[in-house]
Figure 1 (spheres, rainbow, N blue to C red):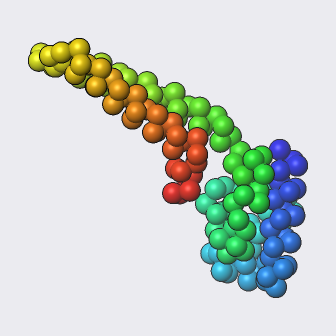
Figure 2 (tube, rainbow, N blue to C red; figure 1 turned 135 degrees about the vertical axis):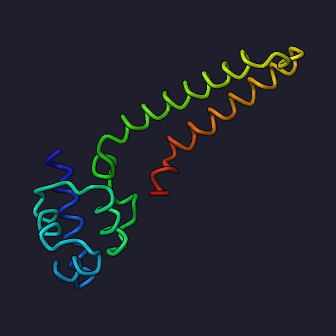
Length: 138
C-alpha cells in the first residue's frame, strides 16, 4: 500500500511541475483543498476516486499511466462481488418469472431461447464489469 501512495505522489508531483503549476494553483483549478494536494504529494494519503479523477483530469494524466495497484485499490474485490451478485440476481429473477408464469414456456424451444437470452445478458454485464466500462462512467 505504501508503494502505491509513493508512486501516485511522484506521478502527481511530476505532472504538476511539468505543467508549471503550484500546489495552490492545482488546488484552485481542481476545487480541492491545498492541504489535500499536499498530503497526496507527500504520500500521506491515497485519494478517493473523485479526488484522483479531478487531479488526473486537470494534469491530463492518462488512466493507463497508473499501474493496477495505484489505479484502483480493491477494484478486484468489487468486480468479483458485482459479477457474482449480478449473475445471481438475474438467475433468480429469471426463475421467478418462469415459476409465476402459467403459460410460459409453451415449448422447449421457447425455454431454450429464454435461457439463451439470460446467458447473453449475464455475459454482457460480466464483460462490462471486467472491461471497466462502469469505472469510466464515474
